[in-house]
Amino acid sequence: MNWLTNFVRPKLRALVSKRETPENLWEKCPSCGQMVFHRDLEASHRVCPQCDHHFRLSPSERLRQLFDGGVYERIEVPEVASDPLKFRDSKKYADRLKESRTKTEEQEAMVVAVGRVGGVETIIAAQNFGFMGGSMGLAVGEALIKAAEEAVNRRAPLIVVAAAGGARMQEGILSLMQMPRSTIAVEDVREAGLPYISILTDPTTGGVTASYAMLGDISIAEPGALIGFAGPRVIENTIRESLPEGFQRAEYLLEHGMLDLVVHRWDMRSTLVHILSLLTHVEIAGELPAMATNAPAEVAEISDPLAAMPPDAPISQTAEPGDGGSTSEQ
Image (cartoon, rainbow, N blue to C red; front, side, top):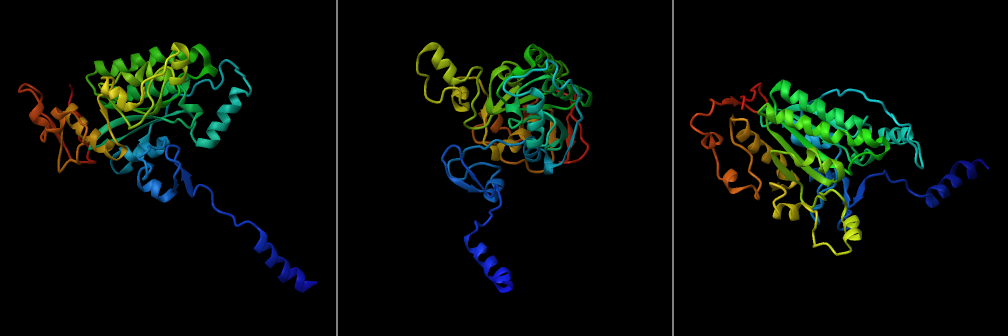
């Protein structure tokens, strides 16, 4: 029995048992259906090597890609009531929050951080679609207001990366109130003479589109991003007509004047470096990264940011990438 128990049975179990494969080694592209190895996906900034589909990013991944050297410091945002209306549909709102926090390892759907982009101190607020669809509630509103306040206090540009399905229905009117509050916060940044750049990713819809997402001094979108207020199916069912091909996609909106740029993820950081060097009058020492190919001609042709400045513009400061140079007042 010892021979059977200790040798034969383990061998038989090894032959018939399923080999365990670590999870998340492969991811299926939702656009082309191709299975992509996780290391290849990470190396390409989570862009499908087959069809160029841009996978959704977590805030941490987004911040690492945009800040110089992936170095940044998170900014603590004010706490809010977690379930002010004691809302319940098929599940308690409190339980949904708990599930999202466990899944994403984030407390809410927006993360605020400070770091340098091309040597310029910058505030970035990044939404997380993985947290209840990136929906905007009290916490997201407070996070955006905090980001705007930090930008004004530090005299730093503000970049918001939007990724949301709209307002959070579980918070009712309290969620909708964040639309005017966030609009006022953006206006405070503008009145301070500081750049506000909006990056719209897939998807950006609902109340987020109707407020801060479309208010950027420069509005940039990733390729193929769905951007709109109501979704295409809702519109088709309402007007009872078929929509044009590519309707509400980034390229369609660029063609119709709703966006300034559609920039591939690989070119996003270099594009921001160029834009910030122009808007902040800070000359970046050393060679700048290549500009995205679909940039406006008047921007792409400027090799020296100071050449675009009027004669009476304030003298610019020079910042080495990663040093303590600050932006000049507008």
